[in-house]
Length: 202
View 1 (cartoon, rainbow, N blue to C red):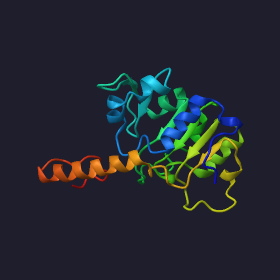
View 2: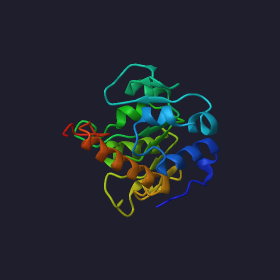
View 3: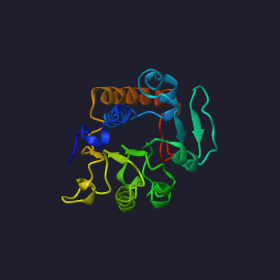
């Protein structure tokens, strides 16, 4: 598997630095709104335009409260984004959340980043999108099958960055994980709702 992005397709330093940030756990274990409100990363280091956030709920375009960023529907997000990065749990509702229709909506120069769960992206549709140059490339830390089968077609592309589901194994991500565990223990003790409940059960 490729764990670097130093080849010709990733000479754009902005793209490479963002993909490295995402795959190294920079966006893990926190909601986008939390990250957006607290991070100076977007303003001072990487983003020269704007950041759009979306969810599976399909909200229309609007300002994200407490941040300078925009919230958008899934369709709006895909149509305007240069980099689409996915951060959500895998459920029956989100299976193949990014498939053929979504790739058709994306810019030809856009990149897809998935550090959540492999099943969120339709693997066959991704292969087709790359073959037809519907998108510029992808960065994947998770796969439809793990470990990724030997000889899988995704390995053939020079514009794809792959890491073997270790994107969250950074000092920063592990520290954040410990912080969230402690915070949730304290919340439960106080009778409060824990952070990041996925299935609605407390």
